[in-house]
Image (tube, one colour):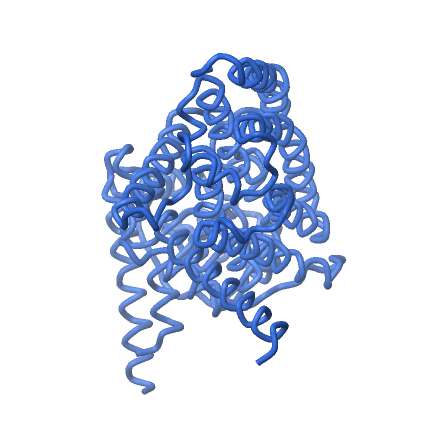
Length: 321
Length: 145
């Protein structure tokens, strides 16, 4: 068999693995989120297979395209988000398994693709010809503008630490050779910043203004029903896996599975820890207005990102910063 | 087993439609969704958009103005979707029956799947009614097979 066919088969295989792993773990993460929220509120919470039933139900429901909506964009937007998150997961899993084989600039590709689900939400919201949906879409757009700046600043800290590498594989190898990025002052600061960014990227409280149930009734998703809504929900759940995985890879040293299989369990613990922090933040903070969110990210988080970059440059000379 | 119906009954998302109620039943519906009763145990969630709804809880008596709008809103829901009449007003118009604004019961406007009587019904009654509705739908599906 020639090389091109082999490469195509390998790519399809990794995409399938990425999709299945992200969907299964993402559904678990969604259940974990809801269950932990329920326990915090002193309730019992949903059963374990609740996300599966929710998704199956949405698959069997009618899909309504609202009058006046742009039919193609309205139905294509959920698929765009799903495709993007699948590709990101595939790239991350392949890089974890073969760190030496990743391509130059895949960090930039991953960062671009991680914003595509948000763009899909914006597209779908504006295509659905509903004033509340377009309000949700515009809020999502402002949120993307708000969190991308601190996110990029936090990733630049990783680049400085890893000696200017823009390949995720090199970042993993650097961390395996010395120590994880988070084990330094600037790295820890950047990790904290990216935890806050993750909260906004996943549209979890206090940054859930784009889909605020109580004021704009689901916001961007208001006109979606059936399979289209199910695909949007699945994309959200898969992001619950992919985004923490990305943080584990660039800040916590990835998953060193070749060293010992115990490290996979260790990475799972790190993942659960990130999820718990996310759920606790979401349950203890009321929703902020979109202007407050922008002010928070630009005026409070971004300066810390600059401080982290300066510390990282100092860290090239003084160990530990 | 009818997987389609099972999935629907395992994750009922309810939409609360207030068609000129006195707000009493609405408060009781909200009570049913509080941590004390915890409807999320059964996969029941309150949704903000009628497009996401699997069950529509209608409160209040239908009058000349609200019945037209009610028909429009229920028509916007994605099928299959249950309609549940909550409270005496939507079941039978209660004391507003002889009003000037032509009140009528909900089932004279749209087909209704379940009735919950009471003024207002207790949250326990609503949970029981939803459970009975799920049972009845599953039993009907079993009979068809």
